[in-house]
Image: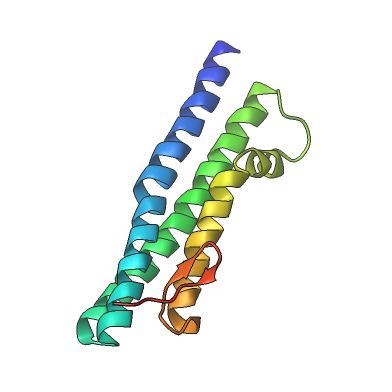
Length: 129
């Protein structure tokens, strides 16, 4: 049981480190910078390149999130502590992180739907320069 517990703990740490600190922060920063640059300059060749970079970051974020949650669910299943649907249980346990991921995707959508291309927690932000 100690080996399985270490594996589950390692999978949880890997999820937090890889997804939250690497990709989630990057996606939030990139979408904010892209939105502000669009508010200032409009669509330019540079902003189109930034958009491609943001889209790739969000795709990698989703891919790593799914893989990390699945690995953690499998580790918990091997440990035997988590009956039933392990993936749903793990998703529920990491729901704050999942909400942050949904917010990052919402910021991506806001680039196209908000007048100033920037979203904050209360809705579309007005950018005054």
